[in-house]
Length: 364
Image 1 (cartoon, rainbow, N blue to C red):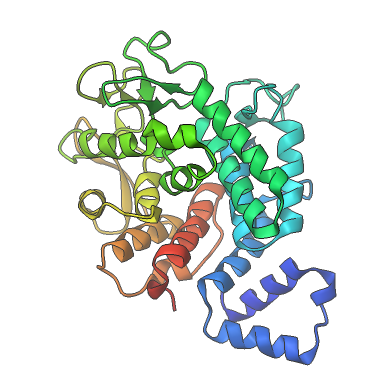
Image 2 (image 1 turned 30 degrees about the horizontal axis):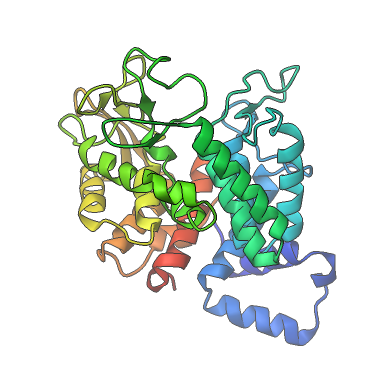
C-alpha cells in the first residue's frame, strides 16, 4: 500500500539519479507536498511502483496474469500514465518499444498482441481499436505537455487510420469496431459486433481536437446512445460484446453473454468524460453495487453474480463513479494504491487520474 514515505521514494525514482541526494530545500518542498498529497503526487508515486512491477527496462508493459504478454491496450495505458506522472524518459522508452514491436502492420494501427514465448512474437496482426485510441491519446497529451508537434502528428495519423479501418454504419449511426478484421457485418452472423468498453470517452473528446473526421462522425455520441439502450437481463447491464445487426442491440452470439472484465471500464470512462451522464452512470453503479463487497461481473441471462471484485483497483473505479455522482466526499479506496496484478492495478491508476482531472475534491 502506498504511503507518504513510498510517495517520496517514488518521486526520487521518477526524478532519477540527480534526485538521489537533493538539496535540503528540495527535500522540504517534496515533503511538504506529500504531507497533503495532491492527485499529481499520488499519480507520481503510484506510477513509480507500477512501473517497477509491470514495465520492463525496454519499455514493455507486462500483463502478468496472461502469460507475460504485452498488448496495445497495455502500452497505451502505460504511455498515458507516464505523461500524467511527467516521466518523459519512461514515456519515450515505452513509445520506442511500441513503435518497433507493435506498429508492424504498415497502416498506422498497432498489432494487438505480443507474446514473449512465441516466434515470431506477433501471431495475430489484427489491431485492438481501444489500444490504438489509448496510444493516440497518450501521444496527443505528450505533445502538449512536452511541446513535441511530431507526436501530435502521430496521434492524428492513428486516429485517421481508426476512422478509415475500424468504423462501420449501424442502426445507431457510425460505430467503432473492436478491430479492423473480424467484427463487421460480413465477418459475424450477427455483425456488426461492438464492445462498449472500447469507447474511451475522454480520449474521444480530446482527440476530436485534432481529427475533424472523428468529431463529425458522432462516434462518441453514438456510444453514449448505445450505453443507454444496450442493457440486458435482470441486471440491466451491457454485454462485453454486443450485436448491432437488428434495430435493437443484443448480446453477440459466439461470445459469453456477460457483463465481464471488459465492461468494468465503461463506468470509469463515463465518469472521466467532460460531461458525465449522471443518470446513466447511476444505473451502472446501482446495478454493480447490488451485492456488498465490491463491483461484480454478471451472467446477463440469469442475473447471477459471477465474480465479486474486491481488488483495490476495482474499488477505485467504484470510488470514481460515486464521486461523479456526488455520493462520496472522499475516494478512500483509490488513495491507497497496492499493486496486485496488471489489470486492476492499471485501473487503479486510471481512477486516480480521473479523480485528479475531474473530481479533485474527492482526493485529500
